[in-house]
Structures are given as C-alpha cells and as structure tokens.
Length: 131
Length: 107
Image (cartoon, rainbow over all chains, first blue to last red; front, side, top):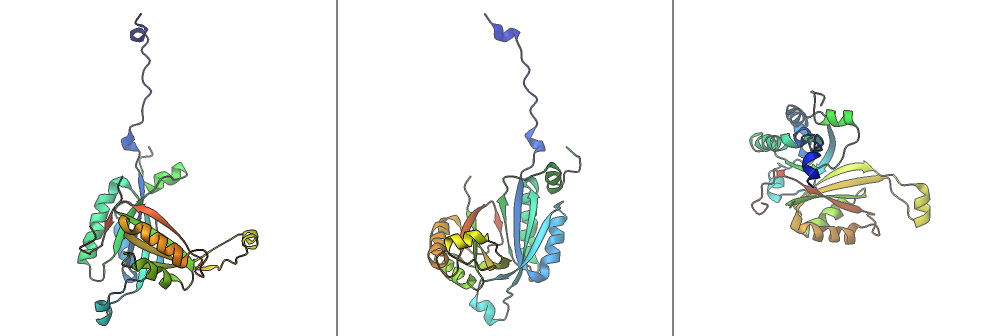
C-alpha cells in the first residue's frame, strides 16, 4: 500500500540561510596617529561596534630604527563585522596600508561562534530591516 | 577549514613581554603587539595554590603562520609559563584572512 503518496506532510518552512549573517572579529593593528582614520573607514562599511586600545609594537627592524622611522606606539582596533562585508573591507584596509603614509599595519579576522541577544545581533550585523 | 595563520595571545606579568617576544622569535615569530592590562584572581584560589597573582599584566598578541604555532606555544610554556616569574598563559585563535604582512615568505 502506498500510504506515502496519500499522506503528504508539507515540509517545514526553512528559514533561508541567506538571512543569517555570520560575524567575525576584525583586529586591526596600526600606528596610533591613524586610529581615527581607520575607525572611520571601517565604520563606513556599516560596522557599528568598534573598540580601540593603545598598544606597543615589538617588531624591531634595524634598518628602520637606524633611519629613525620606528613607531612603536600602536592602536589595536577590535571590530565586529558581518561575514559578507569581510572581503571588501579587508581589501579597502589593505589598500590604505599600502597607499597611506604611516598607514602600514596588519589586519586579520577571527570567526565568531556565538553572540547573546537578538537586539545585539541585529546591531552587530547592522540589520535595519528588522528581520 | 584550513587556517593559514593563528593569533597567539600571551598574557604575562608586567615587564615580561620582552621574554615572550624572545621566546616567540626563536621559533618563527616576526613581531608582536603589547597591550597593558589588569588581571583578576579569586583570593581563595591564590591561597589554595599558594601563589600571588600580580594584577598588572601585559597581553602580547602575535600573528604567526599555523606551521609555527605549536613550536611557539611550547616555547612560551617553557620560558614564560605559569611556573616562571612571568606567570604567563597563552592561547591561540584561528585567523580567517590577513592583510598587511609584507614578507615574501609569508604567503
């Protein structure tokens, strides 16, 4: 008996995974004088949460210090960014690293596994549509 | 997912960031970033284990290729681990993508 054909249980509506944005932690290390610049740059990509801390670099390059170009005072910017903006943002940051005088730095992303709070999640992923 | 780089965070007592960097550089690290911080520890844990936790800390953040990570972590444990004066702990986080490393051998 083909019961299966008679009883058609509709599949549960699956929430499309495209609505769910994964988040990453972006860490940007730059010379302290350029902090505002990079914060503004990252914010222009719709990133809402950033924290910057003062830090010191330890990389010594004999040539650089001979020329007096060593800048040890750094800023570390921690930003939470949505996954879909990551590639574009990293490219923009890299471009500034190369073109901006004194703008050289390092940036990397760390995948985030969880966030607590729907309102916080919406804030972090800049979801203004209220999905 | 394969990660090319890892970010090692090493938290040590104030003044030991140089020791951290020395240990890390021996195994392939190029440079690090030092952040000042303050540690906390419950008083009864201090009494029980017989150690005093110095509150003033430094966090050394080092970005390294995954291949070097194990060696560096072991070196940190030996040189600035909990039993040393640095009273350090270290952990590594996977890193998705990196920009700004200019070196030829870092691809």
